[in-house]
Amino acid sequence: MKNVILGTAGHIDHGKTTLIKALTGRDTDSLKEEKQRGISINLGFTYFDLPSKKRVGIVDVPGHEKFIKNMLAGACGIDIVLLVVAADEGVMPQTAEHLDILNYLGVKKGIIVLTKCDLVDEEFIELVKDEVREKTKGLFIENAPIVEVDSISRRGLDELIKKIDELSEDIEEKKIDSPARMSIDRVFSLKGFGTIVTGTLIEGQISVDDEMTIYPSEKKVKVRNIQVHGCDVKEAYAGQRTAINLSNIKVGEIQRGDVIAATGSVEESMMIDVNISLVEHCKKSLKHWDRIRIFHGTKQILCRIVPLNEDEIHYGESGYAQLRLEEKMVAKKGDRFIIRSYSPMDTIGGGVIIDTAPKKHKIYDESVIEALKIKEKGELKDIIEEYLKLNLSNYITLKDLISYTGEKEEYIKEGLYTLISENKVFCVNKYYLHISHYNKLKDKTIDILTKYHKQYRLRKGILKEELRSRVDNNLKVKDMDVILNKMVEDKQIKVKDNLVSNYEFEVVFNQKQLSIKKEIENAVRKNQLSCLVTKDDICNKNKFYEEVLEALIGDTVQKLDDKYYVDKDLYENIKQNLIDYLKKNKQITVAEFRDIIKSNRKTSIAILEHFDRNRITKRIEDKRILY
Image 1 (cartoon, one colour):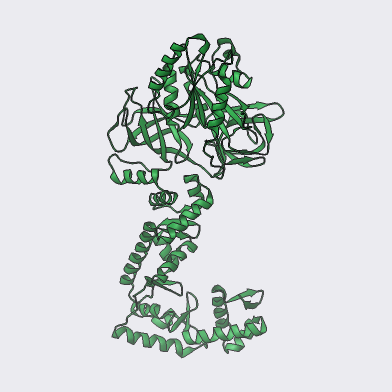
Image 2: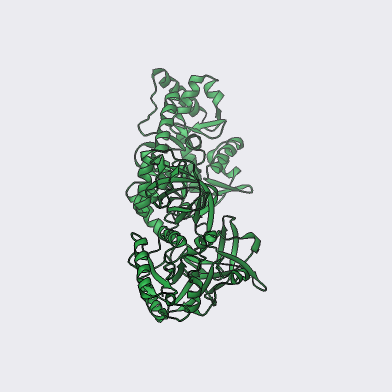
């Protein structure tokens, strides 16, 4: 069943609250001051059932200009608006301002309700109708039905209910499968229950016992109980007026404007990219660094504006801008907001959030404007790609993308899969890199190797760990391995024995080096295992001999540790014989190994410890087994 929120709008004393009382039998003015003064100050909430059996949540907003911030808090989530105009007064200033607000918030359906119709004649009613039609031209409500009512005599109420029921059939389905999010408009406590928050659930669903987070304080809470329209329920869905009883938090730790959401599903912003439109009738333009008020959800925040494609956004026009906020905002791409001037506080426009995690932009940057157009109108995969493009020095996780886009995990995975198949995104374990980020790491790797080969012509390559630290020390070993494996696959590099080299690189000896090579190989073979040779034995601290020895490691010479070297063929033969022995006998002692290789205890221990370090064997007390 669709969930419908009905809201009121209109000038003070035009009969909004009286109309709701006539429809529901309940008075939404609950404050003592409201009853004394006869005006609504805070938001009023109630509900009623339509003939089609749908239960409609109602938000009754105050009409006085001094309480416009309360009206803005209540307008969040309205599906159908009742634009209330008193037949004896016609369109008034707050009527127009409320219309602007609803228009910018994206409300699409409404009914124009002429109240107090028993106080005037039919001719006057027709004049008021003409005035309303003139004032609503170009707005979402310009072709809305006009219903004449009188809340005291109950004239026209049945027709109004019928119209509401008809409109409720065409309400768009809410995003129930998105992570839950609700802007809080009331916070209070009840004895025996504790902290309770209310609001209209913007998207997703909340269940009893869910673990949620209050933003921007990031306090973790648990849902103890849920009520929808005064009834206890196990779950609440997007589009419902919802009261949530929370544990693990006190009333003083939450305020109107906070957001309760699924943990990790939203990002906190101090800067947002937006598309702004300004109303014409206020004659108010916005220049660089003007201070304004932004109303988003149930929160009001002061900010500074930075127009991006012009020096100034003129009244009656639209433009891209960056808002530098004075406190944290919790928002998602596509959220709508209202702008009011700093002083005097007039509603001057509104807009749509395009990016909640931008970098600082400069004016007239065409690449920024193009990127904003893609984010504003593009598919989810385009938005993901742009986000990754803007974070070329960061390693983005799936959780980051969920928080940024506010979309469900499975949709983001679909977008990533498409981008990976199009070679626009590269996956490194749990991280996602734009292909240009991967190319930057790849080019840096090749550049480091090229310089290394030039400096050390006889070395087969650089150690993987040294290469990783030079490319990007923020990369973990397992992440660098993914990048290197991709480069090996593309025949750009070679990896052998933990050494990395450019694909085409080969060690080439000149005549002198070939002579030294032969001397070293003979020296290593000469002693076999009777006495292990050291670098000093082989090279006698001659740097030319040391360079050639380094080049032979892994080919004809095996390095056991920082001190000893053996012939490579002999080493491989010993290793294979040991593996065959352990497969048959399961374990071996140092003495048994010494007898097999026909050497001494010192040499045997040096070789076995090398095997231990390289995970060929594992030491258990005084024995070795296969690793």
